[in-house]
Amino acid sequence: MRTDLQELDEVIRETVVRWRTSSQLTHEQASRRFRSIGLDMSRSAVTAFERDGRKFSPGEWVCLCLAIGTTPQAMLAGDETVRLTGTCQAPLKNVRDLLAKRSGRVTAGDLAGFVVTQSLEDFAEDFGARYAELDALARRVGVPLDTPPLRLDEVRDWTKQEVEQRAAKRLGVPVLEVAMASLALWRKSLTDERDRRAGPRMLPGTSERSARMVRAHVTRELENELEHHLQGGE
Image (cartoon, rainbow, N blue to C red; front, top):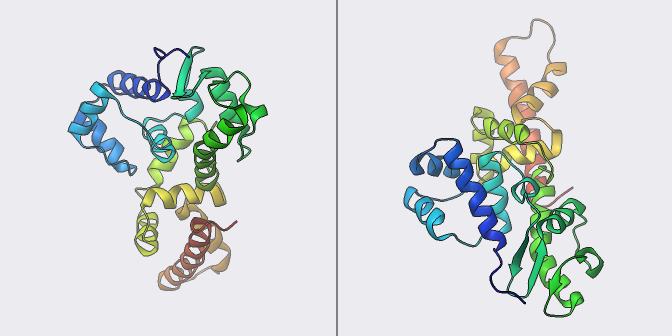
């Protein structure tokens, strides 16, 4: 097998570098953007990343996509063949097709176009672990792999709302997880879903004090649903 192919993580790195430079962001500004969505990268870490590159976990890959307003599929633009692991290479188109499948399980039949040095069945099992993690994360947070970038920008904006921030504190999770779980459950923010459910429970002339109590009660209900979802419930 050739050993001079570009690696998948390098494709990801180049996409992020193009985003930062085209957005005219400094390394410090990019660092703040990454940290705002839960990806711990200091200014010096961003600089080192652009210079030397690094490996990414599936969760970090999704966070990077969220930070720059793209998706895993869109990040892998192009037709060139890349090295996925030390024993596998594949055209980017085939990788995109695999991500689009989102079945939660990789079989040898899904790896058409992949060139591996071990048996295809064994590799499918090995590679499937990483793919399944990315797939499960995308399903859990409600951001399908083909989610439009604008939708991701909306999710980031939700993290600034007080209701989301309080729920995150009560549940003991990053506010980004609350926002993405809300997208998965209701296709809207926690704040908007609270207002939608609370509205019919208020009669004309309801006092502000009573309205606050209704909204608080609804928020608790929604937090219970979020907690169940974040713990792996349907």
